[in-house]
Image (tube, rainbow, N blue to C red; front, top):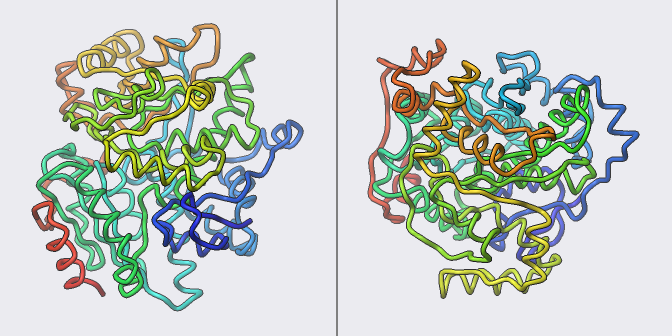
Length: 461
């Protein structure tokens, strides 16, 4: 298995090199040259596997430069940190399946990928006797999951940028209360898009990237997406143990990585129904799918802050496939975005988009109402991001089908919003209670690339 760039400017590389490269050296995103096909018979043979066993079956089809025994060990170690034996359990409530992706160390779906990626980084660095400086941007969950995935690991330093005051209190504490010597938090006066733009600029400076051995943990890293593909297979296998008919997935979406993992699963042959992309008021992707309008707007702060994004990095991976793997066409699209603030697609391309996805936008009023309604009917607490996905599923997906809603975070991470909706806070796990009163460390900075670069250079190693 070899990996290529969406921008077409690199020779095919192996999996370990793709992990370490993160963002392709030509500024594109890495993708496998082809997707391994999974037959129906093969899928059935996976039905009784544990989560870690299934993860090995899926991931190993993309990895041919790590011995099987080593890969199994990395996977087992990654999911041993989860508090539920099923890792990503399913519960059925009010006519939908909730896929709980929040049983990892930071109570968010990012743990599924970043525990694996942290162990993978450590393995490759030890093998190559190298060091790595991870640079990442977060709207809340990626940062804490990345930090907990690499804290204390040999040969790794991590620098995470987040928008000051625009994450939940728990999200901020999960990052800034980690004071290990190799962890550096930077709170930026600005938006997530400001943070992400600076990270992209740092990776686009190839001399700087090479000199300081930069690595990526954002979902621009292919290994992140790959690890997330697994739970689509896991959920489908568990749902079809007891239900017949199409299995649809509703995915609350910010940076497009989680739903792109579902798209990859579908391309591998997983016989799913619809992929529903659910957004909040920051609905550029919904406008694109429903109205052919991919035009930049202003980020609106909402009660679902991890989705407060305009430019979704992983959307480039999908566009590459939409444009028939034509890198020239892709670069033209991004030149149009830079010049005019929009991307234009042909009617034929938009027809394909609507075959691949359906979409709905759920505003804050509807999100809070969904948290209330769901709790009144089921006694089950939804976090605001999951509520967006549940609301979209109930509105758009047929009630006589299996509707799987991805629960991307524990409600205790957004206790302020739960209290706004219900009048009381979500009961907090011990790991959340322990955050309060811990010492914190964080550098507050303007959204200035020169200042960020200077800080990183001063604190490397």
